[in-house]
Amino acid sequence: MSKVIERLGLDWLVILIGKPAFEDAPLPHPTTLSEAREGFRDLEGEKLDDALEYCDKLLGREDDRSDKIESKAFKLIGIPGIATGFITGFAGLLLEREKLALVPVLIVAAALYVLVVLALMFTIYLAVKVVTVGDYVFTYPSANDIFELSKASLEYVKRERAASLFYSFTQNQQVVNRKATYLSGAQLWFRNSVVLLLVLTLLLALYAPFKSSAPVPGASMPTVRPTVSVQPRAIPTDTLQPTSTLTVVASTDTPAAAPTATIGSSPTITITPTQ
Figure 1: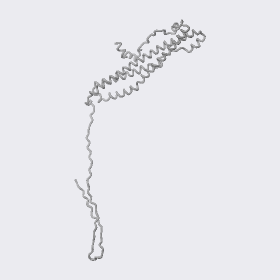
Figure 2: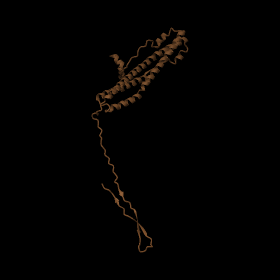
Figure 3: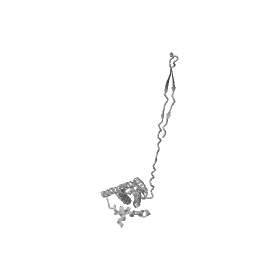
Figure 4: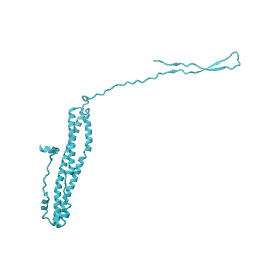
């Protein structure tokens, strides 16, 4: 049972109540400055030079490892940009009851939706723990060693420098291991969110072909009202326009006189048919 809880990342939930989710693993090499000095006490010549160079590379390796871990953590923190579109889209889907008419499907989809959102939020929380500045203190050789060791022999200075570099390496290794543990927890919960999202998508994909076309209980039915429009028709009107008439008057008494013509207007008659 404990392995299942660990694989699902449920053991990380104790961090929400202020308890540590893990303990620092003990290191297999000296972790104090006095132990490091004791380890380099018998080195001389080329062996000491080689040890000094190797300790410097070890310290640089932990710095590079810390940078890579923080880079991966920042990528996980950038998830809200993707999660915003997801949250908005699925929230609108859950609020439209006509798209999820079956109540059991609606309840399961809503539960999966909440779990996905919580998993994403916990992923971001653990990723932020990786890059929080005040929670981690890195150790490096003190700059005052240059002045304090100025009067000592060269062999002694090399031994002190090698011991200081090795001690800084051991302290930083513990800090970087702590960061790596938080990063592994963030990746684990990101995996959980992706799995839950796939389950939710599969549920909706299986439900879509069998979605009932019946109206949702309590949903308002659309009302169709017929509209009758009456267009007026023009009534034909026949108008008899006035025409000019020519009247010729001839006098029989005076044959030499020329006939006279008068032009007059006949009355206008308007005929309007009725229905």
